[in-house]
Length: 617
Image (cartoon, rainbow, N blue to C red; front, side, top):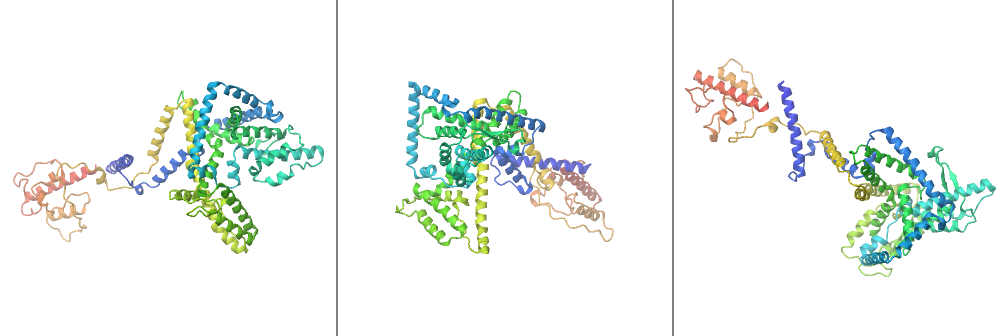
């Protein structure tokens, strides 16, 4: 029983100390918490912080409360989104732009914008935005950030192109479908798209304008709808498209991207962009719908756990947070490109374009093993990168002291980018393979670092903005958030390991109300007496051996406490009446002649042992 009480008190004390350490750390009283006593605690806290800040990781690691309902919600959501896509896309596939709903929106908004008050407000807005652009152009750092982006890989550049990149890919797919259809129906091959198809390849975003021109100038039936059942649709989904749809969406993209367009055109373009954000099937096909359906199912799952009256606001906040990932993917890639482009500070825009072209040619020469061309391009690259202390003849400007850290940050962000990193020159097979090792490590480290930046910083920023916007529109589920916070705090306390076991007297010793007790000398090892001795000697050896025993009977009290009894030094009340003959001043150590003194010493020693036991119980 005493062992159970001891272990219980020790466990309670450990938990209390750990909670006190956490509280002190939060208040700034403890700078370095002893994580050695809490194995894996720091890692657990850090991992949870990263997961909770990133909505994608948080959703991926959470378990649905009802898996059947989750799957059902995902299936119903995907079916509904695909139906909405069909309703919006069908008119765009078979009608010209001026006959579509979007043209009606454009006309109505332009008419509304002609009202005097609306026109005055729009003029003030244009003046304000133009002023901001003028001030931004006066800063070399901002001018570089906005106008001299870096270049990522094919997938990054395709995503960074945004709607244009998605529509270019969809146009290539539709062209191939039309060629197959024409061959099956007419028995002849349609060759008008061959030139652009062979040129575009995986980097169709580069040839966006050429693709649109090829469609406009072709003799193909633009309103012919091509349908295909993709493998992931299990025969239930038919992905339809037409060349006329591509041209109509090209107009809508230009409406909101091209500067100087009317407010009506911008409204029609942004309406299409907003529908794309909500359905993910306008520019990139129905494959993206499946991803969004899972996000909707996750939002439904979170709403089911919400408090009464806050289910809708919880759903909208979760949906906005998750959808921000897909809706802003192009912006995310552009953010990375523009941050990497800060290494171009001091260079002219023309030289930046020449530098990218020279690096591309150098990598092509490296792959082909063309030594002379490779060396020539390296020479061009070195000259273009030259930013000296004075203005150079190639249009670069001298860097100021505060611009150099910006350039260093841009180099860090562009570290290991495939399109901006020189490949090793192809020589012998062994030397080439050897040179690929540091190149591959550089590319891999740079890629991992930028993914970490996206997952840990950029995506949470956009998701946080989307969630706050949802709170402003649909309300904040305060009760639900408070309940989740309490559950997380309780789970953290339960999951944290307890500190390593310490000496019990450090945890359970009561506060001292008397003078500080003297330090106990190290107890000598117990030795069985060789022959029977006096009662005093036997008792002395016995208590020296027992770790639970009190002070040895031969120990002398320090001068500062010489006039205090042992029980007073122990801070306890005696449980017996002291010997009236000897008195309290009589020391317990040197008493061997009197039997009364021996009895008094034994009783006092027992009392001290009792006090020591009370400390542990």
